[in-house]
Length: 354
Image 1 (cartoon, rainbow, N blue to C red):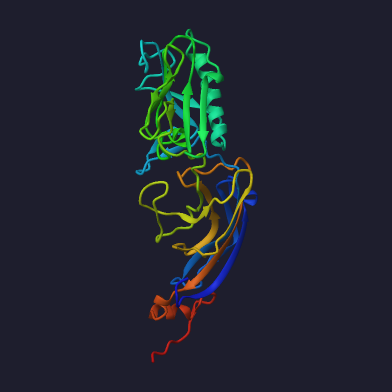
Image 2: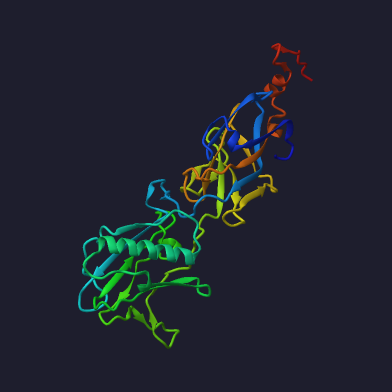
């Protein structure tokens, strides 16, 4: 509330998604039997989300897609990885495309189960799904096993080393394509922001072999191009499409958009717990609504406008709505006249000018 403003009325709403009037668990609508009216049409409603409790039951790597800055849906779901595998040729890297291994124009899209992964469990899951895919679609060369792959994470460098070794006598090269939070895909979680390749030569040794300038021994395989990030959702957004604002702007889901965010909730815990946040700084939102007969809310993460899937678990919120007489309208004569109207009788007291 701005300095000089006066609170005329104050209303507290305690809402739980399981007690919604309509809508869904993540997009509840609460119809108010006691509608909220401005006692003076020149006053305004000011809303504050005082407290929120949300289960950390959503998935960082979900089936949702990214969004570009222009609001166009991205290319991939957050649980998808694109790759190409080439087998054959005289030397590494192989560029001989094989059936089922994709092409550089149309790569294979690998899906993993939606979930919240540590980097080590993500490596294990991708190898598991990769082996299943290769043995089903890339047949007639070798039988792929998980032991052929080594995806190892270093806590010191925060990067993953990707290796593949086979003694089958083929030159085999895997190309992992990059992704971003904007476009979707999980290569970003591995720290792959530009294309990498790794594999084996015909002699059964890991490739590529490099000698970085700061090391005096060979390094095998490929590495993340930047630090990994398996929990890209850093905050949740409590939004409303019914409670209208005109003073908030966001650069979250897309670039430069009028915002319907009521509160940004930072994530300060881990999965399988509750995200509980007290709005200690009292972030407020001035509304354009003159009447509030319902409250519709929805949750998103900080990547898209897509409604967040809490997988059936309830969430709750405490909202304060205040009717404000602003300082700027206090000297307005029309405003002063409206204050003397008895809305129940339609009677205006006589106004004497001083």
